[in-house]
Image (cartoon, rainbow, N blue to C red):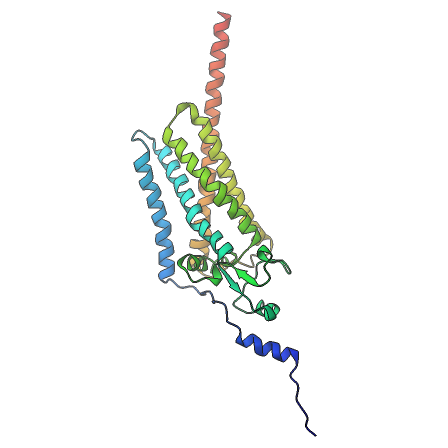
Length: 277
């Protein structure tokens, strides 16, 4: 009698799982390498570009406050367009295809980081994983570097993507429009400039809150604060810029608007007194 030994479906699944192409494994660990340096140089170069544009476009008579506001909003627009724009590019166009017969097993692979809820798939694609973690370009490696501190930026986090669509599509153009208003230096347009600056600053603060509040409320599962560079440079310094400057702008806007209202009230009073004469 010949006895055949059958292979179970689970064993076949495991054997097949070993053969499917593995996704790129994002770099991990606190290290300062070429990507780290390139990211920081790129960040500083955008600030330098914003300063150079202010020298080119603003009149020499521009006040220091006007120059700082111009540089900040130009820098803000460049960061949104290039940095966060590249993040959205990774989310929509950088992907990794999963073998159709091993979707469930593949999603449990240690190098795959799922950020969507169970049974929720980015753009409805069950067979693909999206995000910087699955790319090898400079733009992907840039976000893989930041994802060491906040892993949501290596994949597709629905809240972050939704906020960044507004940031890139609305916030960046609005920052450029504010630069144009500052360049014109129209006295009649003072309140107009401050209105748009208040709108943008409020949006920046709200976006920052919605980015980090879900983490704080759930014990920060995606944040790595164990290394000083991740905590103080990536998470604290880079993000606090978009807290300090918007708060300062709101403060300056309040003073400017209060002054403008006081002047308007004074004019109304003078006109009223003239009528009595």
